[in-house]
Length: 242
Image (cartoon, rainbow, N blue to C red; front, top):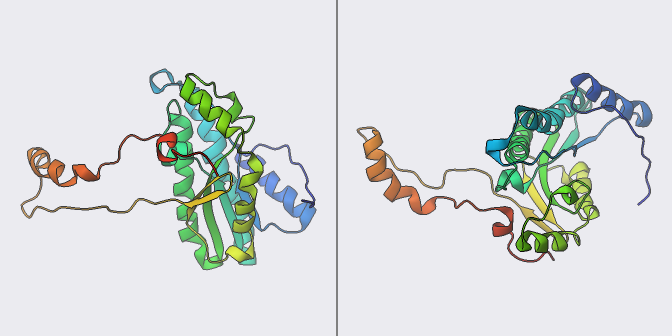
């Protein structure tokens, strides 16, 4: 693949340290054109056993870390009138997962962060997009397979290595994607998906207003058929990766 890289050992989770990471890039390469927010940790546990530290540590690295990096890069992007943010979200947030309330909340929070950065900074030709990658990594390898179905998914996921996600990230960082902003994609081996974003599905109105009893009587019959099931990722991506 080639290219040059410089390592920074500062933490994205601390605001001042994130500034040093951005400055390290500028010191070594003269400018910064893209930030890929890829830092993440796991503290998986069923919700009623989740501790405050389980929650705080995950959000600090992923959601606050993404804000820290974006905020320090934003000044440079604004001055040079261009730049790209690429945020690694997850289907744990977009769809749902067991034992990942902290991780899913942080990852879906990154979608909100990305969308609003895209709105705020479009006037400066700054773009912001998300990728929900599927890959077998050291982090995902730490998740135990608790039943035969999850063991099967683990074996399938081992075939989906992280480098399959890189081409889309590089594309979104490049000038070739100058018209792409505010979007959410997902990658899985040789597949790329454009993901939906929340919009009204259907609506009802009542000229005399609503009461709890009226909601029970009218809202449920009108809207229930459009309710989303409690799917998990494997329910939505039910076929083998291509």
